[in-house]
Length: 246
Image (cartoon, rainbow, N blue to C red; front, side):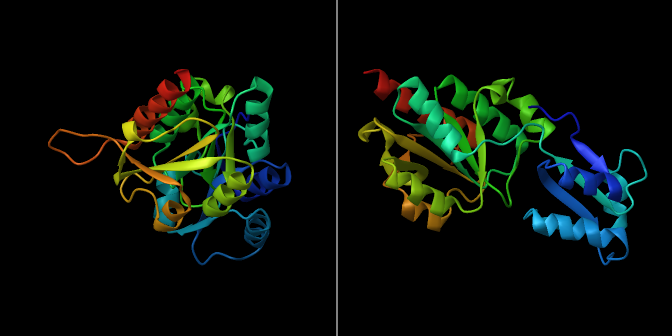
């Protein structure tokens, strides 16, 4: 099912979006405003574990397309999220060992969309992203995926480290991208695998890196020190493809 609205403004509209079960990726609320129906907005947001961004009126005015935001603007997921079990079932239905891409705090929706597109073409069965501090399935991400989001499920989880542990119990092993790792060509990347790619600036967080079985580096010979996150995902994903095809 596809959602048509990407941005919702106004208290009643946002409350109804929550109650209709729509996924609010980002919620912007006027700071220090807690009277009347705003309390209901905040209560619904907390009930659905939505991150609340308190901002000044000037910021809301800049973001508003209608000029009638009433102190609240919500960004709604452009597509429904899948579950981790949906992703594993897709692999099972295809009779293939699971291949999952896990994104540790990718913030740029263009990068998220490009990664979904690459993951689809590389045969990954799905993508897992964190609920907080990361890009979600906004209109920008959906557009950048060039239609791939219709075929490659994206799941949102509260805790990436815990999800990795749960998937390890189901037979997956994990490799993360990091410049300090073993050259990817020297690693065995076959079998049920999770590829972990980190934040555009900070890379994979320490806690998540500690959960991974291997750390893979991409050989680089240029004058700058890193690849764009979506390009790095593509390079590593296709090394996994190469090894799976052998």
